[in-house]
Image (tube, rainbow, N blue to C red; front, top):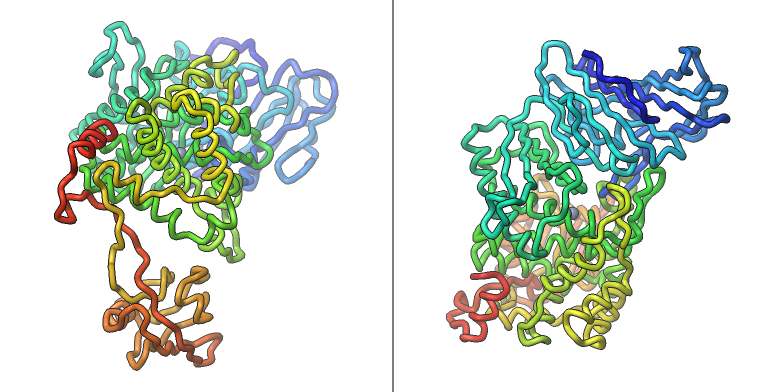
Length: 607
Ligand SMILES: [Zn+2]
């Protein structure tokens, strides 16, 4: 049965004549166009992904006709855009898109599904951002595929609508054979019985129904722990929030947040690393508040024809990472020691990297277009000049949480800050679905921190020194508040510093620039040098090197023989003490937490 005639201005029809050949057919129809040429664009970026991706490269066979079916010329404007002149108010573009990558950014089509990220497949008309859109999915012959999406449902299970282009682009869709699970908000502990919101898991996997149930139980715990941070779930415009999950051996590991859904992909089955899978789910779900609704002004609205740059990704992504670690501890999935280890890694990265002297957390955030799934053929020096805003922001979330608890004597925490951001910037919503009317700027972060701590100077200090500046928080002391001890992981161990080798290679070749300040760097060693001897010992594997270093101590002078560009050379250097750090509960050091430390832990992680 044909769907009823569409009265709106934009309509997409997705069909899959040969899914085994990994392409889909898109028919995009724009009606009611004003006189004059219209520009059709393929996107160059995708919401939540910051590098340019040039989706036009997989588009081919483009033909354009007018409302009467007369052929029109698509004149290339740039590699991703075409100008269509001489139309009669209607333009219908038909084209194929190739795609075979399962993740949060691209298109994948095969006999089991079409995994669709909208920016990767749809051609959009400039100036039609606010037009409502219809999306029609056509099943391949003989396949009983279903659609999972945050798109608005209609009476036809294969026909959906989007209120505008921003919402459409934010609505990835899984079209295939789906294992469904649902969680009603009303059934969760602490819920009101009339809560109508429904969480849906749309799982495409090779596992069992019991695996899907196990995953659903874990998701339920995450939902409760995250709701408790903010006080309530957001209003999901379709009435549902959907986890689009592809756990397939041919998938790529990823997680991508959207307003009312998330795409979660992994190579491994549910049964492999279940807590790691829940951590990704906790991260992406936290985004339905933080970044989707508590949104930096730098990302609102998202641009599809250029890179989006934001100095606030340390908060949008990094603090979300801190929370995915914290939430799993609060949900009882991660024990205290595991939580301490993960939290310690955030702090260690910031404490030991030379990059903090070069760039602030804001600066790191603005580099996202160069590092977020970005492809480059030239080498980079990120190891010395960059700390991921996930890690840096994770460390800031951790440090801020501990510092706020300390400064307020436990009256406030980072949860109160997130809740204040939610009330001021997220909860008021937007006048159009998919838009955020009160996005925040750094001044708002300062103001909310001042509100929850009652101390403007303290709040300003946190931002000025640790976000905009180059100071590093006093993590060892802050961990101590909770009876956690930050210490050297291998005290007394001799080291060249954090040197990157290819562990599978047959020689000990350095594969990334050496760390500024390390013994290897001071000795003049760098990328592509092949270390052959430490003192008198020949080394050709990482294990050999580690064994040789164990026979030395920090401060020892040793000769290092190496091959550079085919020539044998040698250099003398002074070995350092291994700088790796770890964080452990005080109990693991033979001590015991004080009553104050126990109370701090209970309030912080509930353990
Ligand atoms: Zn994220």
